[in-house]
Structures are given as C-alpha cells and as structure tokens.
Amino acid sequence: MTSPQKPALELLIAAPRGFCAGVDRAIQIVELAIERYGAPVYVRHEIVHNKFVVDSLKAKGAVFVEELDQVPDGVTVVFSAHGVPKVVPAKAAERGLSYLDATCPLVSKVHRQAERLVASGRHILFVGHAGHPEVIGTFGQVPDGNMTLIETEADAEALMPADPDNLAFLTQTTLSVDDTAAIMNVLMRRFPTIVAPKADDICYATSNRQNAVKAIANACDMVVVIGAPNSSNSLRLVEVAEREGTTAKLIQRAPDLDLDLLAGVGTLGIAAGASAPELLVRELVDHLATKFEITEREVETTRETLTFKLPRELQAA
Ligand code: SF4
Image 1 (cartoon, protein in one colour):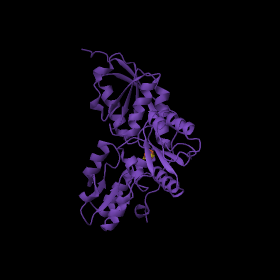
Image 2 (cartoon, helix red, strand yellow; image 1 turned 45 degrees about the vertical axis):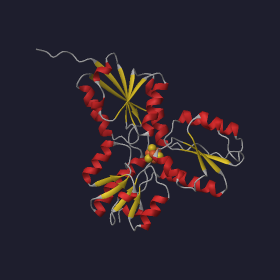
Image 3 (cartoon, rainbow, N blue to C red; image 1 turned 30 degrees about the horizontal axis):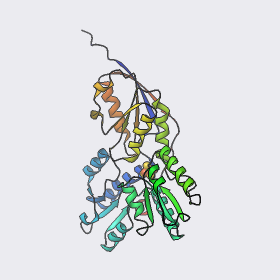
Image 4 (tube, helix red, strand yellow; image 1 turned 135 degrees about the horizontal axis):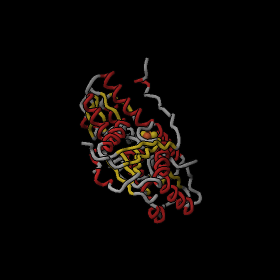
C-alpha cells in the first residue's frame, strides 16, 4: 500500500538568523568558566534569553540566579550578556567574589557613552523597553535622575524636560529599527539641540535579522520566529513580519508549532532571534518534514563575520 502524499511546503529560511557575536561570546564565557574553575559557576540572570541554552548550561554545571545575594561565597559568578548596573560588580568585589562580565561589548559601548554624556552635563533620554535587563543595566551606569526612559513616540511627544537645551539620547541595542527611527525623529524635532549618537545604538545583529525577515515576509504565507517571549530582538522580528502583512508566530521549540495551523500555507518563512541556536532551526525543519514534503531555500541578505574577544582571564595562555 502506498502512503498518502504529503502536502508540499516551501521553506524560506532567513539569514542572518540565530546566534550573534555577543551571545556566542557570553555562552563561551560560561562554558570556559566551568572548564577552568569547575562547577558550579553561578550566572546572574539568564545568560541569554533562551531556555534551551540555559538548560544546556545548567546540565554542564551552571547555576542561574536573579540576584547576587543568591550567590554563595567563594564561587565564580558570570554577569549576563545584557549588562548589569555598576552596583552589581561593585557588590561582588566587596564580597570578594571572582566575577566574569559577559556583557556584550556593544552594550558596554552604550554604557560608556552614557557615562560620558552625564559627565558632560547632559540629561539622557534612553529609548528602550521598561524592565528589560539591558535597560536596567544601562540606567545603572549613571547616578539616579540622569536618565529618562522613552518607550514610544507618544512618550517622546509628551516629555517636558527641565532643561530642554541640555539633552542627549541613547537607545537599547535590540529595538525595532523603524520604531526607533520614528522616536528619534520626534526627539530631534522637539529638541533641536539634543545630542544624538552618530546612528542609533541598535546593534548590527538586530538590524540584520530584521532586514532578513523583511526580505522574506512578503513571499511567505506565514513566518515562524524561533525565540523566547522575553527576547526583545525576537519579538521585534515577529513585528517586522506582521508589518509586512504576514502572519507571524513566535515559538521556543518546534513542538510549540501546531502543524494544523499550516493548512493552506504554501510558503513558510523561518527566522531565529539572536539567542536561538541553529539546532532549534533544524529541529523545526525536521518537525515540519513529518507532515509536509518540504523544500528549503535560504535567503541571505548579508553575511556576518564579527566576533568578540573573550575576557583576558579566559583567553588561551
Ligand atoms: S543582540 Fe546585539 S547587543 Fe545583544 S548580544 Fe547580540 S550583538 Fe550584542
């Protein structure tokens, strides 16, 4: 007896996708720290926003905590890729804890800009999402009261700063390129003397992944983004596809996608946020192949070659 023919499904796989240089470096830092100092190695906050990555590191000997006071004396602690307020390394040093900072160098760059702007007497308008660890970390680089959060164009329109001629702005690294441009336009219109960075601080990985989704979305009946619900850059990829008029769905792992939802879908786009490993993309393709006769095509909009150096303590001797 012949098995019934599976329906055809074309996959357009966005590239670049998945791990960026900052995530790759942060994961390597935890793995090398376990190798070098032995388990357990404590990590303050999810090292990157991906459950699969966190669980894999737990299995190797990492212990994830939210605050430093959950870290026992005498162990090594790693700070996550999102960055931490200055008070965190200061407290670790006070307790004599040895720590490794996995803050992405592109986030650290924003931290240094914030310090310089405040030293020059400017009040910073920080474009970002309330409660995101990167925002908390960046606010924690300067004394309280020197930074105001702007989340939306409406916030930018409503702002009544005490000294409107003495402002500067910075942005979170994982925002929507289009939304941020709109907010920047409002700020520059309302405050013509505002000090603006040469470009926004949205990182190369965030913009490349958004462009890659834009490039496929129109040709797709649906786009699936692999990423965590607390991953800012992954959520932005869903928005990018939706703005192109294409239904988009965020999933953490392949089984989260109900294949019955794909009835009538001839072309499916696949993208992955900066903290999602390639393994999860392959897992999704295999999952789809159980029900569909798939053909795959990768659509590459740019090639990424950036890598970041490891902290000195972990570089090979
Ligand atoms: S998304 Fe950008 S800022 Fe965040 S870790 Fe990756 S490269 Fe760094």
